[in-house]
Length: 226
Image (cartoon, rainbow, N blue to C red; front, side, top):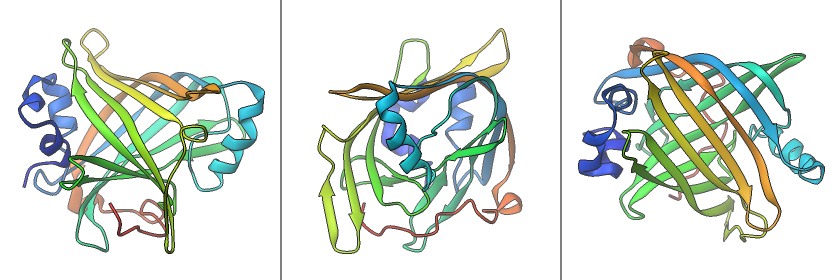
């Protein structure tokens, strides 16, 4: 069993920079978890009217309702099997703002039926987004979101474009700095930019069995529908 990221990228996985290949080999087969620590040079928000929506999402650790510069940052990528037996990797990002940390939680699985990675957002996995992966000419990883769905009990509906946010992520390796660089932008087609961040971090690889999924890292509720 290869990592969920190698499965979705196929032969293009080998085009990633070697440092990115290791980072996105995190999984049950590799037996490694990856903990990144660094600084986001900039965390930004869109226009004032989007802030109440960011604040609402933050109650379930979806997006971040704060802005700032030189914000200490941690990302925890830990593999585990969820309640439905699926290999899952956490993408829990913690931004250490003055006055208290803020988290942006996601858990990812590979969906053979959809042919992509499904990204469950927040503490209760009420939002599920299709993620499509590609590799650019510099060996960086590009991620773009596709369809979003809201799920709660029997409800399973597509989030209209008017309400949804389209995410674009670029993660690369900076040879000079010896660090990973990440740039994230979330925007709405009608209302424009919503939220984003950019900065760099160093990665530490630890045995996944030893790291395990610490308390508070795993979602409160897990969604069966991919």
